[in-house]
Length: 285
Image (cartoon, rainbow, N blue to C red; front, side):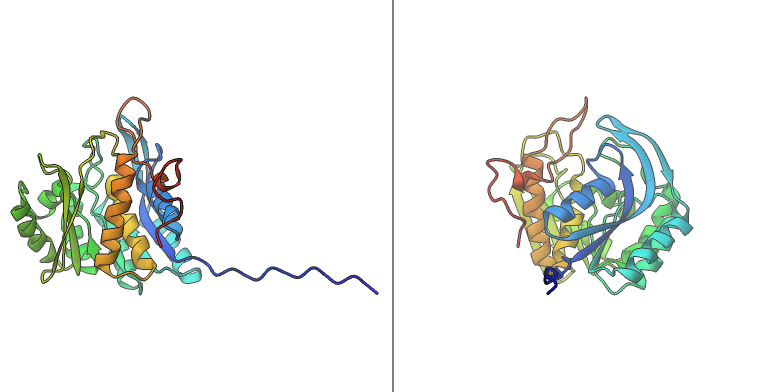
């Protein structure tokens, strides 16, 4: 009698799927690399559509090359049509042509979209052509479930200069006027204070997200990380306020654990929950 064949292991259910549409950071602290690390740390399966390649390190961006629209569209369709997505996050889109193509793709995708309107790098290097700003306002923001601009990006998009928490309300209204369902105004660059304050609002309800301000200069990738964490939360079925609170907690820990790398500004630590002595060793539920 022939021996029985070994039983096949039961197929595992795939984790929630999140797609990032963004540029690459060769230094690994921001962009696609930060997005995928964040998505993994938060219990989701990250996938990517590359929009641009940068030569980048802790000192700045030495060069950037955007991909053709056809290449971006093909990557997106390849992933979405076969694997499917439960949330999409956008980052560096570089040009008006790429912004408009990605906005069209998002509009045809039945999944929440977190739009990080990346304008400049941590070092002040331009990552979005000035000619693309109007496309961000009129094409991309209207299809966003949540937009996550920092204070410099708010000024770029709306002309509102934020110097206080009251200004954050005014800035939120100006961004919401372009059509996103929710906006997070990231107040980490507000001067002074012991707290890093963000404002999440849809124009009717407000959520002030506060955390201790950590004295750590190694904060490269903060914006990418927050937006990706928010997208991971939405993919896991959380509401926007729940996902934003969890994302704020995650990025605060990552900033606190940010480390020196190279001769300039180091990255936040996407794996801070898994390091020895970290509070908790499993992804957030």
